[in-house]
Image (cartoon, rainbow, N blue to C red):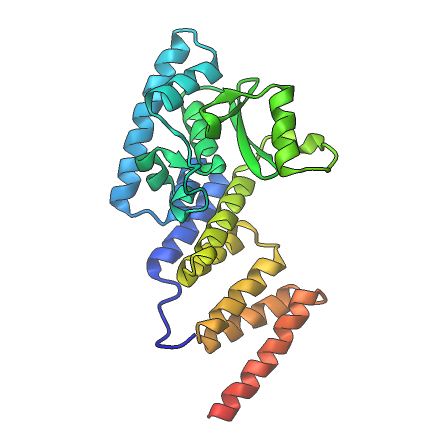
Length: 274
């Protein structure tokens, strides 16, 4: 890349990384989504204020005897108008919680995660369900598709989703397991990195991948891609540090071997330039 080296990892990014670690440790999905976005104080306050209002309304319906999935559908789909973005599905905004709430549109995983966070805060049992290619939610005992306005998923609806996103693959009962906060944030960050990359937003993709390295610390491929992007920005000294760390941590693996070679090559290039 030509031109001056941009600021790749700011103090705000460090704070977001720390917040992401805490959110994963504390099983706090909403805090994790805010960390992914790197939301500032105003954005965090706006999101938490709106979420608190939606929680209060959901709790009101639950106390009135509504089944949990119906209470959430009324509050989030019917009243708030939260649904999936089919017009610009891959836009990075669809992975950012404050933008999803403001636009009332988002990717399946963001819309579903808001359902889960609000249901839990209102006192209902809920979890994300990471189907291949299409993230949904379980509220109480009912599977729902928040991207489609909270439509309940019966066996036929589930089969349609799997036929679309996992054609030819045998059904795996593990697909219906409750998704952890870490796994959910991992998937959000992969989506965000891919969306930014498709729009040639190299800094956005870089930031998402560095956060992903926190959510997926054992994924050597992610760490190698971060080092490669760092080198691509011209930050050779930082790239060498990342390659060296990767080579030591993943010694014996292909990614570790590639990193070790790049450490030597960057050192040789530095000596030549000097």
